[in-house]
Structures are given as structure tokens and as C-alpha cells.
Length: 247
Image (cartoon, rainbow, N blue to C red; front, side, top):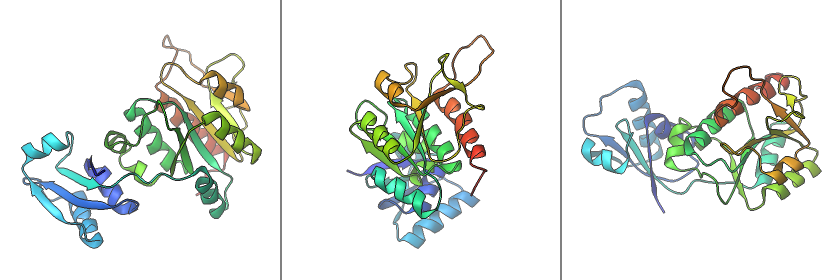
């Protein structure tokens, strides 16, 4: 079923990625020419995407927060976990995977996808049930990075982690427990899957037990937790550093 993506960055990256069918580009009647608007219209023209003008009031109804731009698109193209591993192999890099343990907020999901794409993550794994999906809100929150990221949805997160471990991929979970290693002291090089827990609840019991080791973020303030996307960003950059900041 078609859905409407909104926002300039989301529209541009969707057209750049060319991973899903774009039915039409909708521009607000009074949107002014700018470098990014011109780039979006140029990409649409190159891809043969029809361009439609619409009153801003109408766009406000179909795509709040549109910034004068919206895309009607087909379904988001998910992949299999095997595809993510194959992607890493093609790049001749040890797998770098993010696993989200029932993240529910599309804003957090989008923010994590944005950092993951920038940090060179090969793919993200989501549970099929009780978790945020790659919705227009998540794509917008990711500034369009979701359109470049390979995302797999799995029925059983624990079994998926066990399968990754059988393929010599270490599984590190983020959890603030006494037994966890401060993230900057952990060995985060090599093939690795980083598991990020849900907002407020952290890692589920079975997922935590399946992890090879846990990492935590040292904190010294009066607030004893970080937003999931902020915490994930810090550890993702540390993993990237441990991997030698390879391109």
C-alpha cells in the first residue's frame, strides 16, 4: 500500500537511494527554489517521477512537517539477515550490525538509523512484533538515512543472535549493570553486533543472557540514563573508532 514520505532530506535521500518505487513528487505551490529543492526536482526528473503541485493547506493534511515536499512511495524494502552479512563480505569488512530490542519510538528508531548509516553499519535488525517500524515518521527522523540502510525484520530476536554467534560475530549488549564493561574499555573491534534495548526497559532478559558481553556508559550526573538513540550513537562511534575509522 502506498505511503507518503515527507521532509526535504527524506525526499532527497529516497530519490538518491532508488531502493523503492516512487509514484509521485508533491511540491507545495508556494515552495521557493533552493539548492535542495532543485536537487530533489532534478532527481525526480531523472528517475521519471511525476511532479505535482498542491496547496500548502492540502499538504498540511496529508503530510504534517512536510517542508513543502512529499513523496508518494511503495513499501519499504526490507532484507534478510543473510543479505546484511553478504553486504559486509562484499565490502571485505567484518560485519558491523545493530540489533534493536523492541525500540518503540519512531523518533529514536530514525535517530539510530541515521547514526548507523553514517558510522558504516552494514545493517540493522528489528523484531517483527512490538517494535517501531520504518514509517514515514522514522524516515523523516533519520533525515532520509533509513532509505540507504539495510534493515531486516526477524520473528525471533534471540535465535537470530544465536545464529550470528555461530558465524563468529560477537554480540555486545548495552545495559547499565555492575557487570558491564565501560564502553571505552571494551574490545569492540572485529565482527560485532551491538544490541540496543528499548526505552525505559533496556534489554529483555533472554536477549541479555544471549549477549557475549555487556557494555555501559559511565555517568556522573543526577540523571541515571540516556536517551536510547544518544547512548547508541556514542557506542557506535566508539566501535567505528575501534575498527580504525575504515571507509
